[in-house]
Image 1 (cartoon, rainbow, N blue to C red):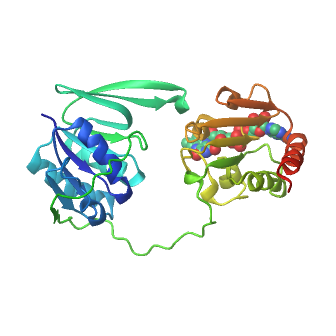
Image 2 (image 1 turned 120 degrees about the vertical axis):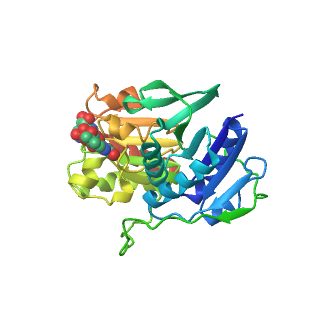
Image 3 (image 1 turned 90 degrees about the vertical axis):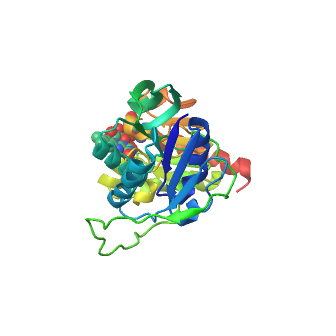
Length: 303
Ligand SMILES: Cc1cc2nc3c(=O)[nH]c(=O)nc-3n(C[C@H](O)[C@H](O)[C@H](O)COP(=O)(O)OP(=O)(O)OC[C@H]3O[C@@H](n4cnc5c(N)ncnc54)[C@H](O)[C@@H]3O)c2cc1C
């Protein structure tokens, strides 16, 4: 029977984690902040520990104590910045193999196998590791388990973090939630000025969507805020429709847009890599195409 130590520093991922834990393990304990630990389903976990999220290094040190007592075959988490950092620190400390952004994990005997998207999502690689191992699962790969509560949760003491947080200030944000948006209009270096982005903003508004951007638009030109950044170093999107305009389709951008249901690309270069990902491609100059598209949409929507 596989024994798992499941953990999450992000309370919002606890139901998804429970779903994977139930499938992979015969017996498991959970370590999570109170809000999540109190929801640990009894059908999945025998015990829950409350550990407030803070510094991933301190979280990993507390996990190590549970690991040494419980001796699990596998440590499970769902990929997020903090979770993966804590998992990596734990794996390094315990000298365990670790698979990240894992999909379709399986355990047979003492062997763990999983897949992972590589080359910006254009290929899938398969991996194998011997248990005990640490597994950081790709987000969104399992239906969250909607069974709540039943396990008594006890506090776990975290060691003093070696880094002390002195102050944190909230970033100035625009009211945009790219990750949840159903329609995203992406803008790239095909736009010649900040002023010209109005075309994309108008299109997004007509469609009820939001504007996102490739890295240069945010990081190099500063035309839009970081909330709009799509890519491995920005936000991951999963809209029903992604319209990428003047974006070449670099792997670092597309890796975070691949899960869009429908991808439409507008690019004047017919050989642009984005067309390999697009469901619909428009080879056109955006300055000619967008005004026509906007006009037609206005006529259609009567606006
Ligand atoms: C470690 C690392 C991390 C990175 N992380 C990210 C990330 O998170 N997100 C990200 O986006 N990038 C990221 N990048 C950068 C990435 O590699 C690309 O450089 C970037 O995505 C390119 O942005 P772009 O498509 O807007 O620009 P370009 O590659 O310059 O493409 C512009 C496109 O616009 C087209 N075009 C030009 N004029 C017009 C016109 N008038 N009408 C229609 N089409 C036109 C061109 O044909 C071209 O295909 C990262 C790179 C590295 C090394």
